[in-house]
Image 1 (cartoon, helix red, strand yellow):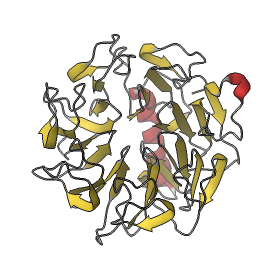
Image 2 (image 1 turned 60 degrees about the vertical axis):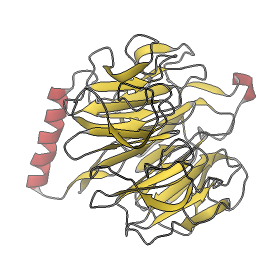
Image 3 (image 1 turned 120 degrees about the horizontal axis):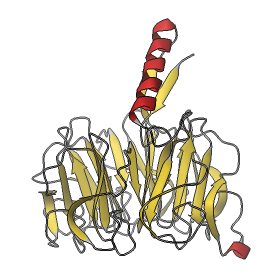
Length: 397
């Protein structure tokens, strides 16, 4: 049989075919993981994680999705909200419907999953139509986004975007600042095409803005821009994609609350936009409307931008974070905000990171999930509501 190994966002990273050569390749990959990561046993548990404002979701190798944390709007997708528990799930709960997902993405108070066949399903808060099913009714369990097959999904504050296999971008939901990129500020209850005829290789949705990356590494952004999150040298909102100015070619983009970060193919990190707490990582709290290098000279393999903090994973799988830290979201054992990258405590080697409002989560190569930071709503998944200043193991993974 064929096997696909997915990356942190659930997208295919390595595809193996049939026959003895494929079997040997699979054995080598499994052995490499087992030898390089001693923090959790095989078989693989969680294959990807997605953090929202105050909730987190995880995906297993079988495609089963679980979520934990705040559930007032049904963003955990388990079919209920349960006021008796104050809308809190402090440990993973299975998403209803028994769907098999290839990837997950979490917005502020909603979550979406993509099947291997390209069908998008969303659940949770839907006041702005971010679930994409044609109404503004909240969803307590997954409902399908009709009309299109997607290659990837990304959820923002109150909007969602998807990328087709041909590289066409579509968005839906909140649009007051031009978040959807359709040249209007009209809220959309179903997918609408991003204008400009650009072909994208990836998309990332921030709280009020969206960015896309072409296969050639050119970055474009659109939406709310009062703090320079679009990186076009202005603070003017844009209703359609504009090129990020004065920046290098990027391999990865990640949009946060009022800021955006990009990673070059060589591992150099750049950020732009708001910098209230040092979320740009350039040793200052100065806002930047074009990309500025993250201080420290670290070479990163991945990068993820949150509300007011940012985290990156180096090529040797060491996690670093910077920015706001009042709840321990940087994971360095303190509550001191940092203007430059600081190593996450504990010495655990991770393969992916995801950042929420005031918490951070990561997974190991062996499938274990860890979270740290704010935990009032149980978003760390460790069966408590106690903040953690360093990584705490998610129960069940």
